[in-house]
Length: 256
Image 1 (cartoon, rainbow, N blue to C red):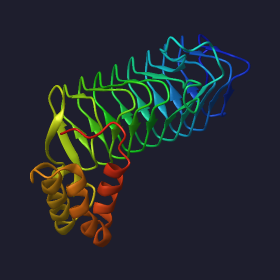
Image 2 (spheres, helix red, strand yellow; image 1 turned 120 degrees about the horizontal axis):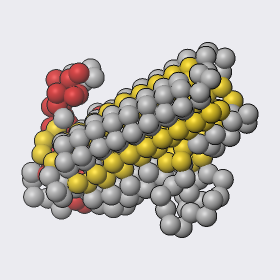
Image 3 (cartoon, rainbow, N blue to C red; image 1 turned 30 degrees about the vertical axis):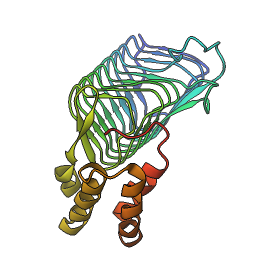
C-alpha cells in the first residue's frame, strides 16, 4: 500500500496495512502502526513513532528537528498515540536534550492546517488545534483543550483540561482547567460551560466550577487566600480538586 513514487527508508518500520501516498518521504527510525494513512507529499522524520489509525494529510511535517538554536543533532524523538489527524502543513517537532528529549502527542487529537507543536511539548488527548494555533517549546496541553485559530502559547506554559482559547489569544501564563481566555495578552473570560456539558458534566458540577472560578477571579482575593477558600470545595468535589491542584503546581503564574 506504498505508492511507487514515495521515498521510504529501509530503516523505517511500517505495519503491513499502512497507506503511503505519492511523493511522501519517510526517513529512518520512523515507526508507523496499523491502520495509519500518510497522504501525498507528507514528510516524516525520525526518530518518530506513530500509533494506530493516524491520518497525516498532504505537506504535513512530523518529527523534524527542533527549531532551537541550542540543538546540536542529539538523538531526540517524537511519540504520537492513536487516531490523531494532522491536516495540511501542520508541523510537529522532536524534543531536545534540554528537557526529556521527547515531544509527546496523545490520542484522538485534531491538528488543523498550519498548526505547530514545538519541541518538548506534551499534548494530551481529545484536543483541537484550529488553523495556525501554535505552541512554543516545553508547553503542556491537558485533555480536551481547544485552541482557536491563530492562538499562540508561550514556552513552559500549561493549559488545563477543558480550557478554551479564543481565536487570536496570546497566552503568556498558565490557563487553569475549565477556563475560557481571550485577547492579547490572554485574560480569563468565563467557565467553558458549554464544552463541559458536551463532555457529560452535570449541572451541579458546573455550578461548583463556576463558584471556584468566582473565588479565583471575581472575589478580589489574593491567590493564596483564594486557594485557602477553595480547599474545602476540593475535598468534596473531584472536579474542584483538579482545579486546585493545577493552580498549586503553577510555575509561570496564572492568566489574571
